Length: 100
Image (cartoon, rainbow, N blue to C red; front, top):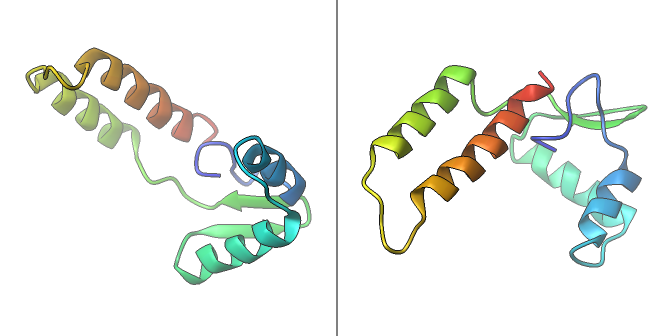
């Protein structure tokens, strides 16, 4: 929801079910219970007639740029491909703010 929803682009429970079902079995009741649980835990999820959406983003553009710069400044590791990790992080974080 963080990267795919906002006030203008809510996601129905059916859409959420379809995404989760691609990985594991899920139904609308499970989604409903989990959305309610996440709201109780403080996540800014809004439920409307057209679906659910995240009311705010976790990162600002400045924060994303800081994270990417910090990763670029870190020496490479044999265990982690730094450039690949930077690319994946940048794609994920950028997607989170594109809909804003």
